[in-house]
Image 1: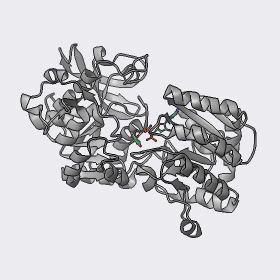
Image 2: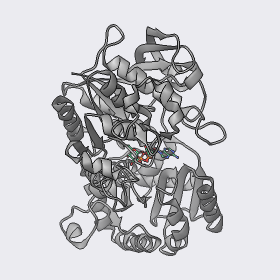
Image 3: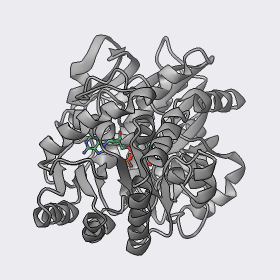
Image 4: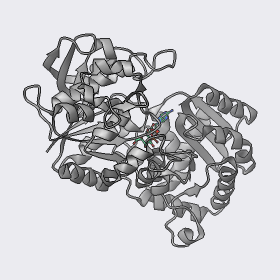
Length: 473
Ligand code: ADP
Ligand code: GLC
């Protein structure tokens, strides 16, 4: 079975968040399960320079305003189709945003082109390849199922990694899409008078999935459906919640070269050296007290305003905090100010640093994730695997992937983290108190770390679920 995966980012070639981790790991996870996955990705500079042995398989003289080539090759171990369209993708930096931090003004064309080429590839337009199933990720690939539905081709699956990003554009783009007129209806790509790329995918794909069972339920409610709940409820029979796994080779505390000291479940004490390295890098006082980390986009989704507000409480429980992240300028500023108010107790590093993110997981005692909504979340999974206890809001995938340290779970030795609800400053502060109390019992804490490190966070089960979903299509 040939599956064409279509995405706007894929680890380790280009990554802004968890989407890349998932699209990067899924092809390998499917190997041996009867699904052969090739990934179509835009030819950003970072992708072009990582390509090995690439061959052009087709030329397109005019793709949304310029000429383009489809290349087939390998990049960092992945089987790829690359859409080399310099007028659309030859821009350094973030794949979605210009240097001014705003969306590229031609994003409607950039990702319509990706989706159109995906559909063409899938239906066998170019000699030598056709897919049995097309797997589209998020709004950037959302039009691909629409092209298949209106112009013919195989069945498709669309995965929602985050309903907050919908790719909603003015109706004026419709003429350029090459879709038949009848596609511009509520039953097609039309959305509040414009064109909705994610909406189009949700309407036109043969099946829909999202990245945790809880999020699959949440997005069918008015509160969390972000305007698409009606459509999702209507399609609930083909809506699946499949929790993400992680790449347990990239994230392996026993071999991780980014750590100051590697460790396993039976040598958890060695984590201390990583803690010392974090203290040095973040200018924190040295000590064995509770150290939290945050590795995150700094946005409201991630509850970073709540963290800024609760920092006073955090330090009064005797804890320290190291933050690695970037995003919203206001939140970056609020966290920087907090660090300045608590020198030696709070350290903030603004930026994106893959290596440092591993060290933080390998040396902090706990990772704080107070998201307002979280489709799946990967950093709590890395935390579990690295003995870094997740302290999380009980939403989406954060609700599904760990067991709260309530009394029953603690006595049964199965607790692997701390969950709180609702997502408010009060509840977060209460969770900080609970966590500090748990930390005073070294044996209990150790048992939480071990429960996490034992949890199956690999792709095993979920890859099988994707494979059977493809087969059913
Ligand atoms: P989202 O995709 O919503 O941002 P996830 O938890 O699914 O959230 O995935 C985030 C991914 O990005 C993880 O791999 C995390 O380690 C990584 N990440 C986020 N911010 C940073 C950062 N500043 N530096 C390094 N890695 C980061
Ligand atoms: C999105 C979500 C995150 C999820 C990731 C991968 O970025 O915000 O929760 O883990 O996609 O599916």
